[in-house]
Length: 218
Image 1 (cartoon, rainbow, N blue to C red):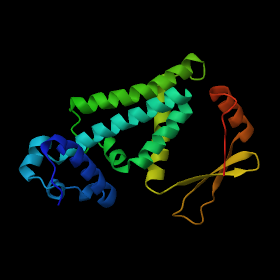
Image 2: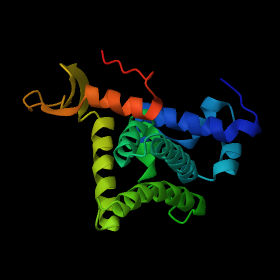
Image 3: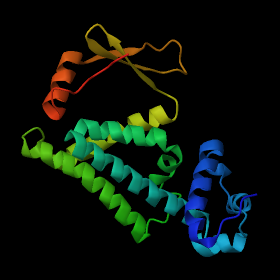
Image 4: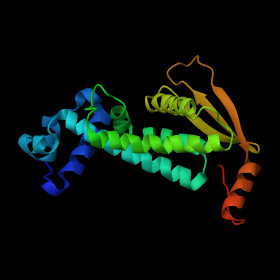
């Protein structure tokens, strides 16, 4: 059994809770089991988090902070709202426990100001991407576009995270082929799509990073 001092108890509990949720689902998370795994008393555990709901709230806050960082990085590096959507899906796949909790009002204390602030930061970044599109004339109704864009990427993220969809990519001649399939239904037709040409990708890389930029697709 590993023992943690109080200075890092919060981080240790959130990591342990995320691990339990990934392994056993939300139903498998209990305060007593996590406290026992960490070598701390159930009383000390409750002193820091109050209840199981408190742990889930803290996990949701942490998730929104991680997602906001991912979206902000994608925006700053590419300036593309599409790439922000890709970052959203990647976050969900990389942090399934956080993703499972973040949008569950039935499990969370919706009056928690820290949770409200973390959510606001996340959606402000998403709305900012839509506002830029509106300024360029690509979007007429920013509010509707924000909801639609979020619904699309959130839906894809949930399907990929849950194993309902599998997304793969491969090189075909001078283009990138993307395939989406349902591994649970062998009779379901794979959906293929062609991405931008590799030469176009190379041109974009060169324009952004200089002539020394290289692109390899294996």
